[in-house]
Image (cartoon, rainbow, N blue to C red; front, side, top):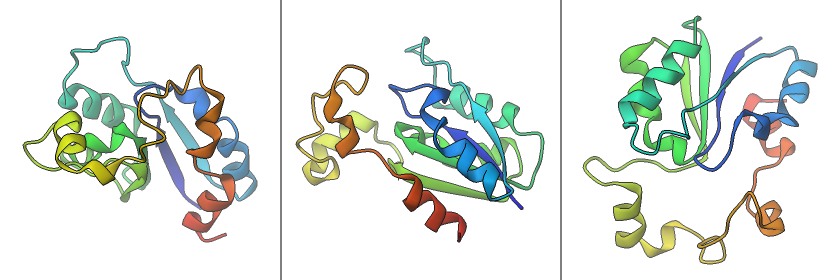
Length: 141
């Protein structure tokens, strides 16, 4: 089976994967939950990528990033060999552009109903999050 390294988004923490982990384990997969340094707003993408790479001790890991974590996901394989990287409802970075630059240059990139929402405080977050069923389809079961 597979080893999944799950990377939360910018306004989340590892607990965002609490519903998914047992489902992956039922299928025989192992998981690693990365706790990104979201309390360090000035941390660079390299710092975030290093945090992920340092969490993965196995080069067979599938590193899966959600939301804004997609911005630094492509940097991880330069720091640690991994089996695969997966963008799960994640930002696909454009070289030389910040997330803000990308959103401004591509207004359709983000659902307008999501803009300005605080996923920690707003119950409408359920309309924008991925489901366990979609993740099961990702792993082929």
